[in-house]
Image (cartoon, rainbow, N blue to C red; front, top):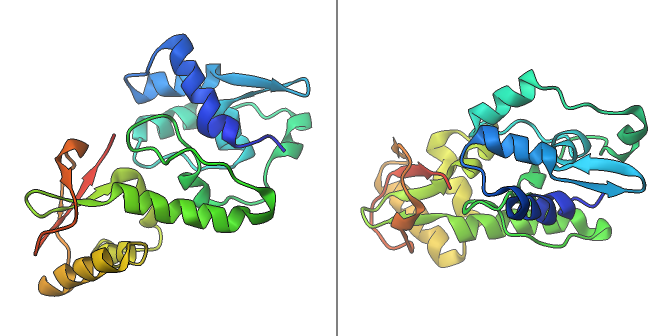
Length: 210
């Protein structure tokens, strides 16, 4: 099996050094096709590892990337299909990093305990990336919102997030949702620099990126 950490860390980051940091989804996708490793005589690009071997779905929060994947089918040679996982694993979202501010942290995973380690990665990402703005809005990464939309509706989203937070922060979020009658309001995203620690009495949910 090709080590997913090649895609999650070394491949994109080394490509940034060689080709520069991409400024758009189109350039990022092009870079993912250029960044590659040769393993056992086979060449694997970052795009091939992520979207073919790991069967990741096109990112909903990056519509240009999804469109490019639909228009440019990634070739899958027969002799390389043996490296593909049998079924998609959504939690891999929290193991892959493209080097952006909002990307999950790079970690080492073991075959014997990968499921638990992916669950830990999900928890750690939520704890590290969710916060409250100075105006009392709950700040949520766009990637996390897109990940959960398939099984959590927007009104239940803050409570779902609270299940992954430390007890004090989880209680705070639940209190705020209860104060608003069990509903959350949503606003367009803003810069991550506006984040602060959880510490406001009422909030609405705001999606941020990068």
